[in-house]
Image (cartoon, rainbow, N blue to C red):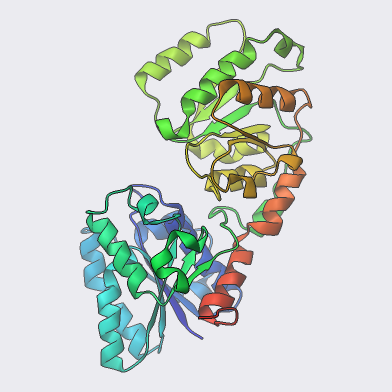
Amino acid sequence: MSYCFLCLFRADKAASGLAFRIPQLWKALADSGEDVYLIINQSLFDKTLSNNISLNIKKKVYIIPDIIDFKIDSLFLVPPILLYLVTIKKITKFHLTIGGAYFIKYIKLLSKISSEEIQIHTSIGSKNLEMLVGNDFNSKYYQLHENLLRDSYKIDCLYPTSGFPEFQNKCIQSPGSFSWKYDTTSIENLIFNKNKNYNILFCSTLIPQKNYRLAIDGYKKLVSIPDIKELDEIPKLVIVAPSIPDKLMTEIQLFNKGEVGHILLEKYENIDKLLKDSYIFLSLQDYDNYPSQSLIEAMAHGCSVIATNFGDTSKIVKVNYNNYLIEKDVSELVDAMIKLLFKKPFINYDNINYILNNHTVQQYAEYFKNNFIRNEAYNS
């Protein structure tokens, strides 16, 4: 049965985990032999698929340029493509996310014109509409998503369906998210050195909700403990962030002149090597970080995780796998770091296997195929 994803997102201007994952979901389905199509804009295609797609399945991709203006290009080019797919390819199921929601009315019009019953599906990567729209219920963004949920026949929910009580009868909870950068094969083929180094990795935008201050203060307290000098190597705190405020940069430079401890600043393009080499990964968010993209990738690279215990985080951060769940507290963070550091750095294969068994794009594609494309596992 033919199926089409419509995902339009200006990937060179911002970041969206959901927008980045949809192209990879499409690819996994196409690679498995499903007759699936994708309408995507150029910048998102370049970010997710340009170096990782065969010519055979690329024939089913329709790329919208970002040349004139992202929205203008889409409004001109998407309707004729949709008309072609409905009337010629006889596609009657469309999955709309992000910018795809702008074409709900047009698809409903095509359904009337063609006398075909067209189903609209969507995916939601937030726990509820409040989280989705940042509590701004007067915004156009809220209205767009409310319309999308109301007009969708089925809704793929990353979180429990109870967050959308009005639409719960058409919501299906997914088995969990996946990394848009690493599929099963790439995780299995990761090559590590015999041991990891002592580095503690913090990768995030430096906003208060990510608690970068907790990471820095915890590290400073850690290296002030006399016993830390007994380690074979003094751990470094590695911060990966798109930008560093001047005040924080000055603070870090001053700290690095001290006798013990060092805070390194790294570029995001080095994240793969940093994840491979680093022992501890900090995920200190103020909100539910399940299933966080960064957590999945850190665990897939054999890092041990220290995470703040919010929401469903414990579903992925398993304390019996040499991980720690803490409250937002410096002393708890330091205690967890000490316990890990005095075990000596190791590759956390329990975390790697957990991701391979629970959070791969291939597993997600199988769930999606059964519930949304073939309807085998769906009860309305």
